[in-house]
Image (cartoon, rainbow, N blue to C red):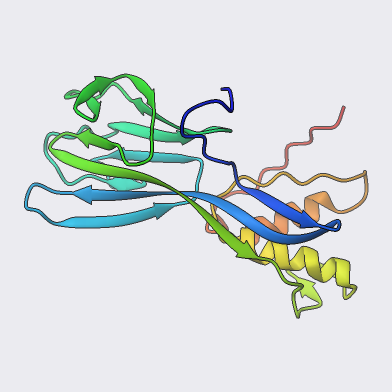
Amino acid sequence: MSKKFPDYIPPTKIAYISGRPAALHLRKCKLVLEREEGQSSEYIFDQNNIAIGAMEDNDLVIEDDTASRYHCRIYQDENSYLLQDLGSTNGTFINRVRIKEAYLKPGCTVTVGKTDIKFQSLDERVEITPSTREAFGSIVGKSLRMREIFGILEKIAPTGVTVVIEGETGTGKEVVARTVHECSKRAKGPFVVFDCGA
């Protein structure tokens, strides 16, 4: 996807000033459910994949008998948000046009069954300051640089963003990954090591 896409949404990233982390930009999306009765509910998601449908295990549960169990999903790719219909019975619509797969523009309306969902992209800026702690999970260190890393981990661990940890062999990447997992919303799930070494 080209960065020339009309409503380019920046990915989650860390901003650096003089080689030091200064702020974390978290890419999120806000979905506002508008029901037939005129009621609305607002949900903010920071994960890469949002499952939408009538089943309770979806990220966004639609209480609508015209919505399929697993109706559609919103996938956050590098540059934007992509809506995909998952073979629903009654179809998925963007601004009243039926789609199989389409990019979402901020402000558009997604229709699932009889339920309208307003889509908005958000870019939250979180200032990163060195942690006051000398440990984060099983990682220990009291230097300014380590406390800056703890500050970053404290901010990203509770979110649903994908984290890429880079470093030389033996620097503790797996320890950092395990600690982020233990402090995340997925802590009760399995932690699976996937070694990407050459």
